[in-house]
Amino acid sequence: MTLNAFSLQGKVAWITGASYGIGFAIAKAYAQCGAAVVFNDINRELVDKGLEAYHQVGIQARGYVCDVTHEDEVASLVAQITQEVGVIDILVNNAGIIRRIPMTEMSAAEFRMVIDVDLNAPFICAKMVIPGMIRKGGGKIINICSMMSELGRETVSAYAAAKGGLKMLTRNIASEYGSYNIQCNGLGPGYIATPQTAPLREKQSDGNPHPFDSFILAKTPANRWGTPEDLMGPAVFLASDASNFVNGHILYVDGGILAYIGKQP
Ligand code: NAP
Ligand code: GCO
Image (cartoon, rainbow, N blue to C red; front, side):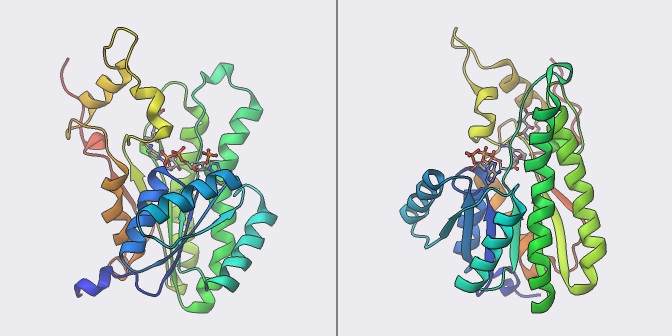
């Protein structure tokens, strides 16, 4: 293996929900490694915000409006990307939502909404890109999993169910399409400082840290929250030839949370 194994030169990479946050960082990494970056978000305002952000860091990304839960929109988007950019070599199923509600207070509609975005949409997007990958001789699918692919906690029943299912969808895609030289793996971030976790890090009115912030620091050997940048290297590895014999694996990037019982109070 040579260092060129980490190159993404000439590849077309589609990162869903990547106007900001983890998806934006992964897309930046891919562009820096030579990929043509394509992203979508749920509305024009977010796509324009993302295009400006990519421009600010010198990346010529292409942005499209698409709600990844809508199969017809995804089908049209994949056809448009294929025509305008090329066959998609790398798909990162990053778009996701969370609703933190005690299970007995969560409506079935709220539960279904989280499952729709965090599990059904990765199925839809993967299903739409696989035929092109087969025709091209291979591809990479990376599903953004979570600590909640392995652990539960109060108020995140829908999210944990979705991310647990996403772990098994990852393994099933790996099993069903590995013979076509398609590698499907998961990237499992720990607790990362993005808008999605901002409510868990807000300072208290008395200026003290949020209790959850202190809890996560005590559960993380690295004693810090992760940043989207911490995910860039692992994401490049899973998208590159360097991981061509890695399949059905969930690569956790969590500062050691899953290995650690937690700091004694
Ligand atoms: P984020 O800041 O909330 O960004 C998620 C992105 O997905 C947003 O741009 C969001 O758009 C978009 N999105 C939501 N629903 C969509 C839909 N139906 N169609 C298209 N785009 C949609 O989240 P993040 O923290 O960067 O997380 C990104 C991924 O990592 C998610 O799958 C999340 O579950 C996962 N993750 C996050 C952490 C963490 O600690 N932050 C840890 C583990 C895993 P809107 O702004 O309109 O919602
Ligand atoms: C929560 C957090 C987590 C993180 C991430 C951890 O409420 O517990 O939002 O779910 O987003 O998924 O890996």
